[in-house]
Image 1 (tube, rainbow, N blue to C red):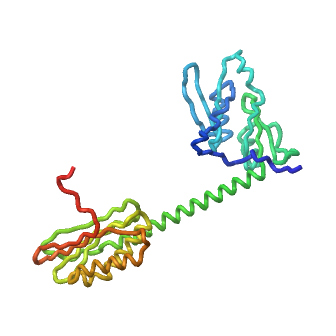
Image 2: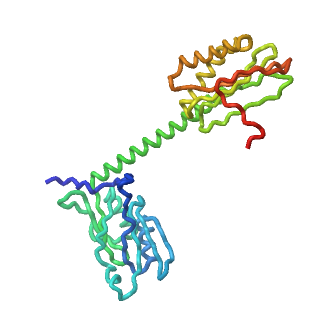
Length: 308
């Protein structure tokens, strides 16, 4: 006969999320005690439980504690003397606690004054167990299995890997944010007859919104606004692609704006997937004549100042 623990000894709570099968969990187990304050100190100070609730209710007080993982709760109830429930105080509770290291938990609780009936034993069914009592004599079992210890350690490993992956992802996003910030204009070409400025605040750390200022020579200034379809890293990469295509072709922008836009469009098309696209607004301001000419490539017009 195998001594491995049955499948229901598991450290991983099962959370069914199927809407056709409504979520159901154990809310609490009732434990009858003589003095709620004394019992509360025992479970919190000696066993390391957390206080879940302490409320005044009609006819008394409702106190509940839970082990550190929070998967179950004990309601500490003080029944009326001479009641049927009062006679349950000091009996076997049939409550079993599960730990990954029973020897360590035994030593810790023993040092805190917990009354154990015997040291951890190895029964025929495998694992280890011991029993202990609370201040009212209610008895409990504390058990441990190697399988549970391995499972808990595996969960710790996966949690650490997830945390490290999230840390690296956050670090990479911060680097991407700094890199993208350098893609926006770092200097503003001088203009005597025009005051202008630009700023971009992405919806996420990085994104596909784009603007640029170009010195086209002979007192002409290029003003560019673009918007990549999508958000996040993918949009940021496409934005960098668009910027590179545009700046590589801007030498012909002032003399041949039609050819400039056609060339930028062709380069962007050749370097992106079929589902990728961007809107683009290009304008040229002549600082001498104070005239603006532009081409709108699918970009939305600015809102009217009187729009509500």
